[in-house]
Length: 83
Image 1 (cartoon, helix red, strand yellow):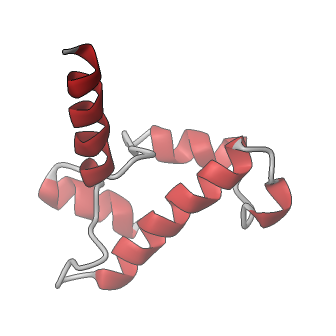
Image 2: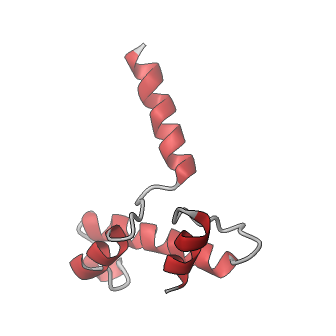
């Protein structure tokens, strides 16, 4: 519910762990991304309960599995590779 409220207020769900208003939500978002990577990597025992239902719930609010910083870094790498 907190993530939905954040999105309604800020227009995105990329909550920083350094968010002054809600650092706990930022940590939770970071943890969801880590759990997702473990889940998709086949390590379901260490994915802290991540399952397809949770994935679908998060994706239903346009959750990004990569942080904005990670996405920018990947885009920069792709651009350099293409040149």
